[in-house]
Amino acid sequence: MPVVKRINHVAVVVEDMEKALSFWRDALGIPLHGTLDVPAEKSQVAFLPTGESEIELVKPTSEDSGLAKYLAKRGPGMHHICVEVDDIEGMMAQLKAKNIRLINEEPRTTADGKKYAFIHPESTCGVLVELYQL
Amino acid sequence: MPVVKRINHVAVVVEDMEKALSFWRDALGIPLHGTLDVPAEKSQVAFLPTGESEIELVKPTSEDSGLAKYLAKRGPGMHHICVEVDDIEGMMAQLKAKNIRLINEEPRTTADGKKYAFIHPESTCGVLVELYQL
Image (spheres, rainbow over the protein chains, first blue to last red):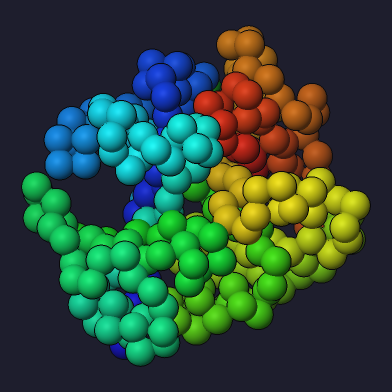
């Protein structure tokens, strides 16, 4: 049976990265591990690890991305929860068998080799959930 | 210096607890640790621990609560992130010194003795953030 191991990260969509960092890094004191430009997702991501998870601040870098549209519609705030699993293909098969709607039918792969896939909020009571396998 | 130790939980507001559990517990397989009625908050909470954090599913039990109004306005989905700190009074003083707006001026205490306080989303770029000290 595939297993959820932990919350890998909570992603927060932001309009103004410096303003967001002034809260999460400067006021709350969570160290900024680094920032990354992700052209494939038309976004910039700041990683703030805490315990075994991370807060990820995500800023759209193009107005025509899905993230930019989400930001325009809903405003800044929590965007998705990512849970790490030990077997992403197995988990996706288990979810499909339970009629859970997936956004990605097959896992995608990040530039550094992590497998990921999103589950549709329709099947999760309103939460965009990402699966990660490191 | 007060320190953020980890994400304690991510709270998800739900309309239908059984439907939410059918995703988080039955499809994703995160064990349900238990459910708790919290009359002081007019809510029912289901705790699903994963790694060192929890997913908390929160259902309003009265239509006149803040949570019920949030649900009516925004629909089901992520409600807040709770970060655990080692010194909640110290953290709240540090936040005030940086002009961060707190919802609770002093820590409140749960029935089982945890101290908690909320930070206003206005100061966090749209995220309701809870502080916890165990």
